[in-house]
Structure formats: structure tokens, C-alpha cells
Length: 279
Length: 148
Image (tube, rainbow over the protein chains, first blue to last red):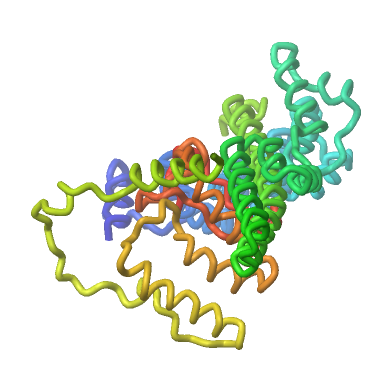
């Protein structure tokens, strides 16, 4: 119901008793209104109806852009293709097509398409090239050559990009195997290697105290207690080795998470070095 | 000499974590709300002989210790829940190792919100999935924020 009120309110400037609210021109007006109000899903319905009656490149672009804005990137990419040829906005459409593929998260598809030169927008070659290199920071593909990678970005950002490149190529991971081996030599050392110093010291104390109690009880001929503390000591010793490997795995996941977040926020802040879309 | 040091350490740590008298005798708000059945820690479902033994151990612990001692574990899930979850998710070899590690981390007096994210119930969020050695299932919650 509120939608009908908005719809008729919007059209009241042209009000006449003969006005057909469902004519394709009315749908276009309403669709544009919804589009600029960022109500993209409903705008796409109106544009779809309009395009059944009249062909218009801008509306085709907006129709595809509706899908882009609501995160349906593959549908958006398919629809942007409709204005690839014989259109005044073909370069914008092609750039938007590559943006859609990039944000769909299928970076292999994006990279394959961006190397396929038939769709590349002449006006926005640099932008697509930047997206191409940015995509390597966002998945686990093998990084391209440093020189080509960094030269794609503006001079003022090259240092940041170089840092991201180095972090991606040489992540500061800790080896779970090394952590486990260190803990097997000295209990808790693997955790200290990972950076969990107090956890490492606690592991050392627990296994140390239990070992001492086991030895002391054996010395004093308390064999039951001796075996009890031996069992507990062995249990916590094994747990300490496992825990060190787990701590290294968690540390690595944290490094990856932080890197991904940093890259994402850095590029989002700069709109991925893309021009604003004014259509 | 070493025995005396261990005794002193145990005494100090026990006293510093002991319940204080004046809290015990204060007036308290009593809730008569029936607790949620799903949060009961008694396990009745038995799937295999192993899980039967684990259930028995845990129920014994819950009956004789946990119910009397109260909800004192600083972690979510608590160490006993962690033990059961670890064994049910990772088996009888890996599960106890995960528990041994958790138990030692629980003994660490210096653990703080700088080491763990805080769960919405106010405890350190430390899920079992983080200790399976599988990086894909690790839940990374930024330190200082609230986990689910």
C-alpha cells in the first residue's frame, strides 16, 4: 500500500484522470525515482517492464546496475553486456562488467575475462588493470612480478601497495610444526614462539610440577602416586605439544584475517581506484 | 624447600580466588524462573560406549563438583562443555589433547581480554572449532569485540 501512495504522489505533477500508472513511461519515471532513492530491487522491476516496450541504453545500464548494487553480481555482469556495442556508454558498461566480475569474488573468472581483450574498455584500461592486480591480493593465486604490480597504481599509493605485496608474498606466519617441536623439547616453548608467553609459562609450570611430583613420589616409594602423576604429566605434556600447534594455526588464521581486512578497507576507502559512476 | 614453595604458591592462588565472606551473607535477588532445559548439563543421550563413558565422567563432575561450585569457568564454552564438544567433534585421541591444552590455558592467571574476545555473556570466547588445526573453521573475532 505505501508503494502505491508513493507512486501516485510522484506522478501527481502530471495528474490527469487519463493517466495510466502502468504505462511504460510511468514505469520509467517511477523506476528512475526508485533508482535515485537507492531502492534498486524495485527499480529493476520497473526498468524490466519499461524495456519490454522501449530500448534505451541508459536504462539498460541502470537495470544492470540495480543488480550490481544489490550484490547480484553475475546477473549484473550479464546485463551490462547488453550495452557493449554501438552504444555511447559502452566503455562505462564494460568497466561496470569487470567491476561486477571482480566483486562477485570469482577472481579466476575476472582475471580470465580481463585478459580477454575483446571486452576491455579503451577509456578505462588503467582501472581494469588495477582491479586485475588488486585481485591477486584477495585470493591465494601466485602473485605476478613486483614491477608490473606496483607500477599499475598511482605514485602516491605505491608504498602502501608495495607493503601489501610484501605482506602477501612473505606473510609473517608461524609454523605449527616448529611450535610443536619446540614444545616437545621444552614444554611451553612453542607457545612462547607463537607469542602466547603466559600460556607457555603456565604449560611449563604445569608439566614441570607434575614431573617433579612423579619423580619425588617414586623416590619415596609411593608408586601409585608416582604413576598417577606420571600419567597426568604425560597427558599435559602431550596437550602442550598439541596446543602449541593449535596456537600457531590460530595465529596464522589471525594474520590472514587481519591482512584481508586491511586490504579490503584500504581499497574500499579509495573506491578501488575506480571513477564514480554518474549514470 | 621446593615442596614449601609449591605449597605457598597453591595457598596464595587458592586464597586469592576464594569466595569472600561478606558476599556470602549479603541479601540476594533470587530468581524462581525455571531454567532452560537445553542448558542443563546432564547428558542423557548415549551414542556409543565411548560417549557413554564421557557422559558418565561429565555427569559425575556436574553432580559432585560443578553444581556445588557454581558457574566459575572464565571461558565460553566452559571447560567441561569444551571437553565433551572436543571429544564429540574430534574423537577420543584429539579431543582429550584439546582439553589438556584448554585446562592449562585456564590455569594461566594472566589471561585477559587482550588474549580472547569477550562473549556476550561476559566470558572469554574460546570455541572448540579453533583448536582442530583446521584453518578453514577457525572463528577469528577481533580482540575486544563480542563473539557470538
